[in-house]
Length: 230
Image 1 (cartoon, rainbow, N blue to C red):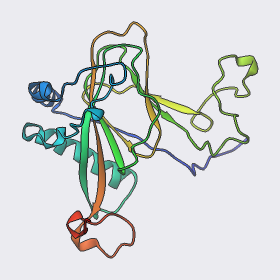
Image 2 (tube, rainbow, N blue to C red):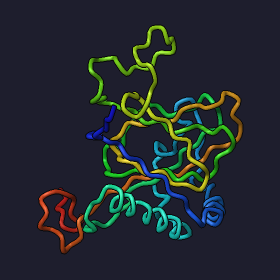
Image 3 (cartoon, one colour):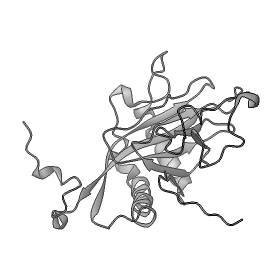
């Protein structure tokens, strides 16, 4: 019996390897104290809430963010097939850090950007994974169909795949950058309760800004120098 599928609602993440990872890692650890933060009961996984989301402005990390931007452009142009009419603008960057297995980031989105990325600086064994949520579940024939149920006897799904999953987990390697649409709900997930060490990543948001000679398009941001602020 012949059959095929048509993927009408894809969500595509991108994983790229940075060839100069050792150099980038060493350069970051030299300035790590500047972006370190005190962990509390409420602030334990990200430095974003500490008011210092400007890692991308560090002169010594210029090559790192140049390399990341090349991967972002590859994702936008060669995977999503956008026209080469945009400048990639990194707007904020912060740390994602985990030192305890029970510390994880709940589902959230980055509502102020187009593309988000995570550069994995240090990944001990059994580090926390990144988990994406299939929020709208367009293939669900009725509400709750794709809900993950541990008891197989009560689960209507025979086997989970890319067509019927409620979530998708990615376990990137150190030295890789993971790129995805900012509007996709995502979280971190504990892989092993015996996890030790420090999982460390640089997270960033970026916006696609139309170049000055491409302002005839009705969609897309134009450069902020044309904005009027009140």
